[in-house]
Length: 279
Image (cartoon, rainbow, N blue to C red):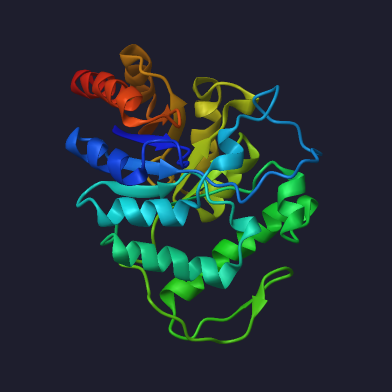
């Protein structure tokens, strides 16, 4: 099992450079950054966590910027978006961002993606809420062509472009792992269809409850847990829980860290270092 950590990087949190170096020194496998371009004052979609939306959602920095800084300051730790809201981004430009970050990091990028939950936010970008998942699938299909072909073209219902030439291509072949975020069972189906991993959310039950059904879905699709492994976010610093997830077949757990300065974060990392020794 691999262990990573995620943080909403803000102008008052520990920087991505500081955190990446601290994680790498302690043997963590990966560092993850989430994304929200902005938060509209209107709210068509309730916050899944209930109550008021935490301040960090308004304040978070762009993940490609923070992860590029983290990659340049480290040598081995993987850098991942957890998750990139691709449906709010231009397909061609995002493909170039992914390939560029994979180049800058020397092949250490993990492309976590999601369709988002905030209807007002995505509609400000011109995304239709009802068809966001169709758009996400077409975007990923198109990006795969951009990353792997010299003269790619794509013609979908939402994403459409004629033959083009664009570089760089990613270091990782055929492309960085695409890890699809979202709840069971719909996001699981998306991950199996066009992803290289799945980040389940806890909105519809516990992963221990639907793991057998997920394995059956993989079998029916001719894929295995090694093909589409699970990355579990928001895991607490509990050694027994981490061991249960390991034994269940979870490939990676990601500790959720608050957007705090180093003096508050480093003791949390030391606790996780102890858990890694036990696991």
